Length: 256
Image: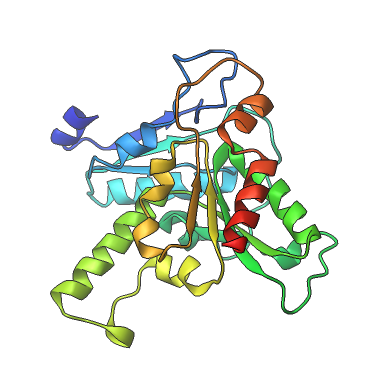
């Protein structure tokens, strides 16, 4: 990939067994929890983890546009290899998908939700094969009277890059307060309250890269360590990215 970037290559690299717990029968050799961390080090690589088909379609279209317009970029998309429901595309999500983060289900949209006005609030962020666990955790939290919104993180790396660009701009021009350039993170999670719990099938470093802009609100859940052979459910419980672990991390963060 570095050699291709040095040659100003353009194109798509699609990985279809994304995450450390997705190939549960393959042991160590195919369980990847770090490729998004490695991809973040290459300035020519634009890396994403789309959860849904409409996200992948938006990203491929945007990548083609950028390449045809003359940008030397390599799009790295990690795709999934387990069955789950593909919803229709909500209105107005294209910008959020491309920028790396958007709210996909507010707490108020959870079936049967009846939250009090003074309910404690928090933000759950997921991606890829772990998103179903994040939704399950949201339903449990809402049932306990906690206003937990769910966000889809198509690329925490792109979120970080944008935050860094805005921070550099503000430092360079000595902008503060209302004059400062706002990042996509400022305009999304920065507009919310409560803890932020990010659960992915990648090592915690992947989520940790946006911690400097969340003012101590972030709890990262990931799949650090070696892979192993077991069921997907058992592996996700082992690494702490199953619904019970996400709920536990959320409640612990609220208590703190």
